[in-house]
Image (cartoon, each protein chain N blue to C red):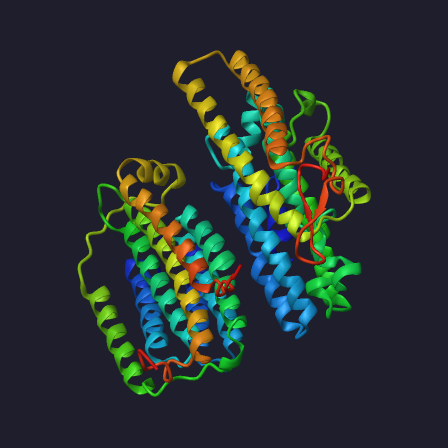
Length: 301
Length: 169
Length: 104
């Protein structure tokens, strides 16, 4: 329960009522998400149950892999804003009249995925995959203890959505509408929109296997996020050093990031073998070892 | 630091930290000792906040509680036959004397010395300055630390890798 | 009633002494490593306390040093625990009283 409560204490619901506005707000979000890992491990271990332990190990592997992606995704807005305070991030988006989503799309995508994994939501709910491992690390928990786990998971989903809205989508600002509409209403509207995306993917996408999930994090998302950080840092440097006018700079950065990000994602996916024309199962050939099926990019002739 | 809030926070956090550290020594079960160690780390993070070291406090939570505790728990899980007791070895009384002596000497030095204090007050925002220092004055240790981490990760993986099976064609 | 440098140094000294006791007197190798980590933490607290209270022309150098200490502690904990697992595999025990031969 610690992580979601920590998140809620940090969310900036309005301009004048953040419960606490830390100097290192962004880093605080990451640290609170990181407290999940020993909690999951101790829950699985104390169940004295082999399957609970296995579920806990898999969940921890998932959590620590996506923690890195989460940190890199949160680095994009911090590079633009120059400060880790969440109030400053919202102020930056208000001042430049843009959402960071428009100039940093790859980061938002990676953070949505990493957020879904960090809160054990489908399509990555390997911890509670009932058909696979009963209920993972909270198999042996029932009653109010299980209630704590479940409520923490839903609260964490809202907390991640709140941090997405704050960092990437402008928080409680809406290009001047906050003089007419109460800011907390704007924030809640955006929060529900982002959470709707989470519920939508939960209902739509099938569950990912653990090895697919890990390969996705380490082979696909991590190199893309590293290149993204490099590109964003370069853009901010060029912008600051050359004193380019704000609107042109931001428009250019946004366009470059969109096209470059799309090209990077598609090119890297092709490079890793997820090409459009080659569906899995069409190119299976049997190897020497009995029972092993080896997927290769070329179909067996 | 004269505010009553800070003073109360300091005493509560110091009691929590030292209490958890004593619990690591005393408890009978090794996993409970690791949980007490996590409590020590958390208390220390609170003490860093009272010293206005915001970046270091968050880094302490992130790395010590989020990662090093997991390392300890994994090591305990991977060594099952060794017994989960937390007993002391046969060196307990000399160790008690040694640690008492070291603690007493350190406390005496801390209390007795005339430290060169400044009335600078709290830090306002440490993260930016730490970042600049890391890339400006201390860039060489920074790069060496990254090499060190790489070597440690590779070394740990190579150490615990199972023996590769002999291949005969 | 105020909190000064000496208070933090005393807390750091007590933690260091407890860590030293754990390192020397625990039978389990993981207990020994817990003591080492506690000594690292005590040293970090001392550094931060000095950085906050003492006169210096670069006060945040203490913080940078602590960042490096945390890094080295993490690397050392990983390597030491890998060693612990390897020792367990070959000797089937992790009791430091019994691992006293270099070659068996």
